[in-house]
Picture 1 (cartoon, each protein chain N blue to C red):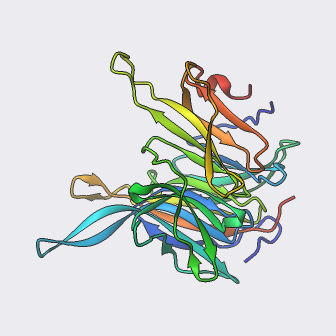
Picture 2: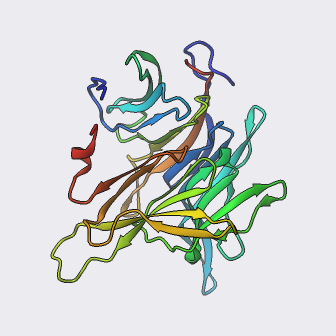
Length: 104
Length: 209
């Protein structure tokens, strides 16, 4: 078992590129920013990071999926938590896609 | 757009909905499926009304663009839920309204009619499929015994596979009279391994084991 030491993990989800399992993508976020980090699972080496600044501290990345090819990444961003609509907390979710060339 | 060195492309916005519960990318990254809650307009007794509806959608890459997401809906299953995808997104495992788990296949003419597997999942159940679409693992929620003073949910784990005639057959993984399983499991995409967690072992205990 390999442990990747991290801190400030507000919510973590991770996805291996299933073809080889060499690349791990996971969510890393705090109140100000949310990011998806990529690690080399063999060495634990940090590869790169995609970062989104939060318009509100209640914004959050919720879901993520990395294609087995490692070329495309989908994520969702919950936003609008600061407003109220009737009696329910009003939020909406963006579904975004990133294209990326293979990191490894 | 492709990533240049460590610079990512600008995100492509696919949709904005009320709530997303699951997203699935095909193995080559050219098809996207998601389950979402969307506001729909209804007319009730002549009056317009809006209601949140859970629905599944899909989108496809077309060159550098992504096509407008479309709902996965069928004449007998207007509201569906995607559990997993296979064969680079050309097969989807869905819950087709009240008819239960079903397979749909992408054809040049559109999605095929749902082919029922033979199980109607509860809202607690999970299902996964191998990348070749030939093996499906499904939890089956066990109704709690009235004598049991517990809130813990127990599950059976069943595997479904096609026989020589193409029919889906069920094989139960956990033995009768043993501890029920938790809802967590993992069917490896190549179909070679299946992991599950007995209910009396928490997920925390099983991590890294």
